[in-house]
Length: 162
Image (cartoon, rainbow, N blue to C red; front, top):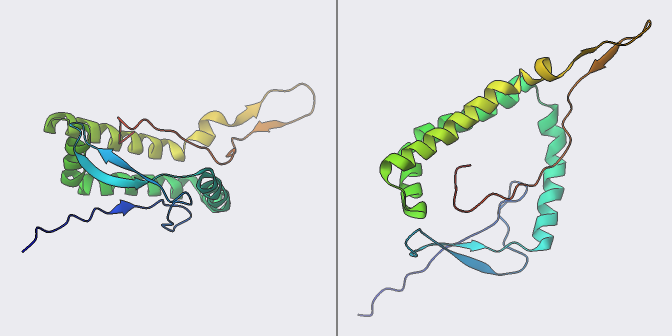
């Protein structure tokens, strides 16, 4: 009997709540720190990037319209899920970045702490940044922070949990 062929999954993009294939049809190989195969990932094209921006702009109204408390709860929930799935994240960090268990745990702790920190500031930012501005005469001037829009982030591959 012939040896079994290893069929490697190619991970798709995540755009607008769906998992479309890359418009380019290309993928690239993701290797771990020792050069061993980890996964195939879709290679996004410019059209895929435009589609992601369009989807983000659609979601922007819904997300920015939520209360600060609700946005904080979403970030806290992500931190809780990461904590609950700690062994899986640590194993993935060890495999992909070649970290020791202690360093992988430290990286995961830093990522969770960062999410909790941002969640803690979500409902306090308006009070700290927004304020009444002193002006001359019988006028009243307030400043309130508002969301600016969609932001693109290019994260380094070496630091998975930034």
